[in-house]
Image (spheres, one colour):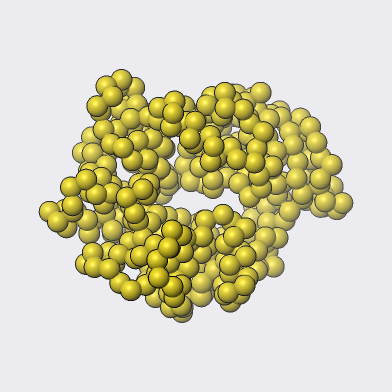
Length: 373
């Protein structure tokens, strides 16, 4: 079995399509969250008709996209509780598909190779053609082989429409640096006819409406972060989003797998200020920065036993060392030596044969924020 990682999709024998989450996997299961639910109804505004990627022919299967996290859990709880997964080492509930129930494993880089072999029949102006052309452009201008680039999201599983975004994966830290250089050079090009460009002000306003929903962030502050980001923009008229992964080989992730050998405990919510002292992985997936000079602003929402847990692990509350997120809304927003304010879930991580440490996890609550001071 090919080791599954973030960016992959799987189809269960029940016909549902799940997106892979994270890089640590339990025995006999794959952590993946429902993205498309198989239904037995004719198409409507909320339902996509699936296009099989192996021959571009339409099947008779119909799917409903489920995107918000709370709706994912609501659907699985009501319709398929067998995909709910809890583990004694973790305080949060997950969704997972038993490996014996996986019908198909979709790999982003293999799909790009398939498109490369089929490029002569890709319709001009289609999203498939645009996605392929973007990958070709990035590969040619960076010198990075196709095998380190992949197409994910709705395109990977044949559930795209002409309004879909182009979602890409780049495998490997050095490969990602080279591709980011190409994107940065293009973003600095002021030629409006250039196919690869940064968002316009109107684009940022639309992005603000969707990403800042439910938060108190102003458009000016939102813009301050978003203009820094190289993992999103426009290719021709289409939005693109890129995840940059640390390793180029899945076996490296497999060797680092600690799902069964680490413990993550919730200590509640916390707000604090600090300084970024290492941003080496601030633009990768998962995004993470090392922090120092921590000053607690609000600890009223910590669990009652938080300080006892810390004492038992020879830690104090200001020893928080890292901020981590799998969500693009936090990626690339704070940089080295910048001071920040943050609010998120405080976690105690106890890895195998390592010292315990604390981190703030962002992305599961609308109350989360990570701002420049």
